[in-house]
Length: 408
Image (cartoon, rainbow, N blue to C red; front, side, top):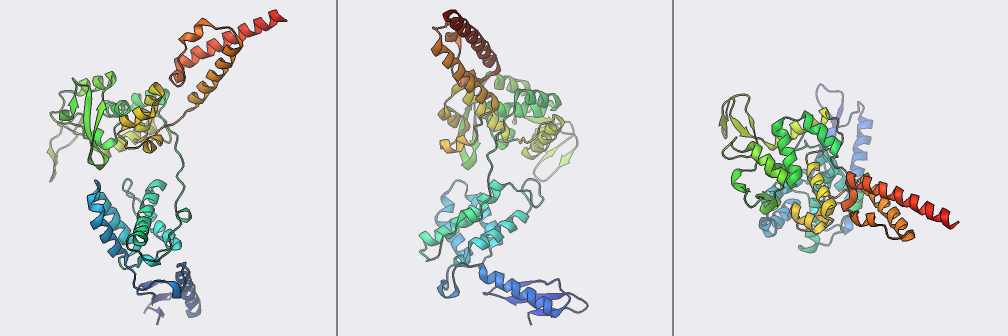
């Protein structure tokens, strides 16, 4: 019996098998007829989940576990991030189901998988429903990759999925730390935290390599640091004068780690041990929490730790105007990755319009000697050059008006 009443309960339960899989839940109904209607509605939803009719559906197709294992053995083990890929595939298998045939995965089921993944605790907050759209889309693309692998490599005759039906929108976030916000943040941050996020702005490093930076990775004579970035790739970053000053402030505090803080209590853990007052490494998670707290105190909204890397990339582009240099600075393999980090703020747009006005005035007036000293866009987007351009524009407009008045 698929609809039954447990002893001592007034709510009917639904329990049935469909395509070698068991489905059971509470009907929420106190009458048998209403529970049967809920069961019939649920079975209809399961039948509609597949785009292919029952007579056209392939029989005996490979399960998700078999495809996942085959994909990882042939391709995943050779990638640089094989360990994290294996963990992601295991999470996908838990959500999709070990014995679920890949041929039965449809766009409707992908929506259900997305909902299950959203309900999982986030890696950062450990609370469900707090994942970003980009993280959810990466997970959904991984499942879609297994389906395409089944079609292209295993040669099963099934329909491809339509990502437009289950991918979430990823808004383009334009966020950079302004000079005023940086000043307020420096006032509320403790010296240990302030030096770290200022060093990230100067070098463009990610949070984890910056927190775990060691002195043997720093070459002050050659003015560079060598870190290991995503995919275990070595990355060399040149050091600016201000970055060297930050390193001099913390030199001698710890024999191994560059950025440290003073321990407030004793710790005798399994992997680490220290006493109160010792200098210890700043863990990425601790830095994340302290930085978020400082953002609240500094009244800075819609900003994260990773936006420090965005700030470094945008400021460097303003100076050099060459995206290839910024790509090398960030350690990206393609410029497509780099373009996601570049943001045009309102001052950039205002400066571009200002340069256009000056060019128009220059074409209407004889050559003005002061214009030769004006830097070209985008180097002219800092505040000092904008004020200089505004003054020159006013002078040119005044001169043009005088010339026209004299001609009349």
